[in-house]
Length: 288
Ligand code: NAP
Image (cartoon, rainbow, N blue to C red; front, side, top):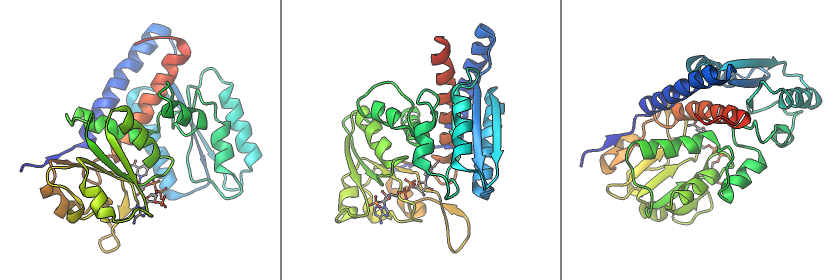
């Protein structure tokens, strides 16, 4: 069986190009800019890379990006004050606070303070609730990106057995709700699941979001399954990035699979751009 390699770089570029075209049309029609505010607290090197990549993506699609780089010693009060200021600024459409935050700041309070109308990460309880009951809201970017990868690769979702491994608030749970919305039959597995391999072998579509290098081996996979690997891990021996799936041995059994890097990863920022544009369109009442 030929295995299709789902190319996240190519599909994310498609999404970003669509956002870029619509952003240009929005500017032309309204005279306004789409604006994303990104807040980074402290000097975590991985977070600095993520923030830099988000700024680059804003430049690519033609957004204005506001960047706040605050010291590690920033108090919760100071951060909340900045968020409130951005909540009340009509020219700002999306607010993103890069996680993790220093320990003196409570992440949940920060998420709850961002206006749900500008919560382009889709983490606010109002947006999570909206997803749960099928109302409009912002969807967490990584799971939203997985849906785009599947749809744009021609993978049929409706009626399929989907097993999601992982139940975090930012990946596993919203992923399950999105697959349900697409009419898959959804199972969510986690660290307490008994006989994980047997559960995963039922799946037509496997979505791994565990955070453990190469945890999903070929014996977990049904012949012909579609495998989406959300994991981003460092291989202890080679130091290279790798997913949660043992790619070399799993790929020959699959009908389609995402590589790491170059699969789900690039989709997250593309969907962030998409969410921010959607926010600007909603605020202005435009339909482009
Ligand atoms: P997380 O919050 O640590 O959640 C991991 C989940 O995996 C938990 O639900 C945990 O179960 C489950 N799990 C852990 N070990 C397991 C095992 N041996 N068998 C079955 N389930 C197990 O992680 P996350 O934030 O969801 O991220 C998951 C992975 O995706 C990480 O590698 C992360 O770097 C990556 N990620 C990638 C992107 C991207 O843009 N591509 C975005 C976000 C995250 P319990 O609930 O029972 O503990």
